[in-house]
Amino acid sequence: MENLKKDIEKVLFSHEEIVVATKRVAEQITEDYKDSEKDPVLLCTLKGALPFMAELMKQLDIHVVTDFIDVASYHGGTESTGSIILRKDVTMDLENRDVIVVEDIVDTGRTLKHLITYLKERNVKSVACASLVDKPEARLIDVQADYIGVISPNEFLVGYGLDYEERYRNLPYIGVLKEEIYK
Ligand code: PRP
Image (cartoon, rainbow, N blue to C red; front, side, top):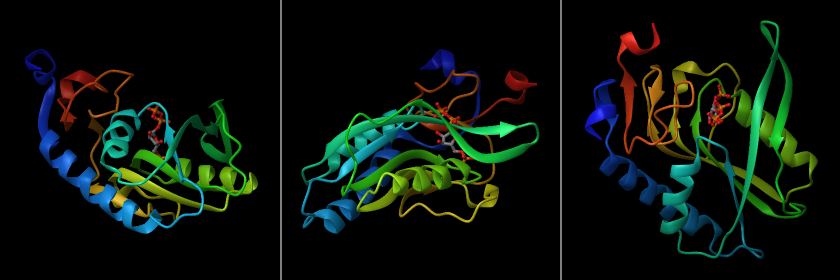
């Protein structure tokens, strides 16, 4: 990873830290859902949550089923309209299912808030969220993930799913880009 590392100002969370944090989250979810009637649905939000999803599901010691959704917050003009654009919907019928939304980051909170509303409209039994990163200082909407891997300062992050113009998702750690890359 020497080529890509040249663009990184600093590493905030190493691969090892991410794996340890994911294991802790997986243990909490295992404990909370071990007596669920139906297998909980791990719902990966594309694209950023893909690496976290892959690590998390391997660490869970319960039966789960997986599904994928791709949403984008719609910001008409300068304001969020409160709606979401669905780029790809779930494939399963989620009615009466326990759904665990798997996110890479909760930033302003818009995406998670919209997702929770969207899923409740589909009559899920319960909805929770596991997010690899929480960035509480960036929050504009009052919403929280139930399971959090790491807490980040209010910086623009890349790596482990997080992108800058679609790049850097494949870094095995989370870091901050050098200013020259985005200026
Ligand atoms: C990112 C990230 C979260 C969301 C968090 O997704 O994956 O879903 O933004 O930001 P928020 O809390 O301010 O809503 P993005 O829409 O960039 O799509 P991506 O995962 O495909 O990069």
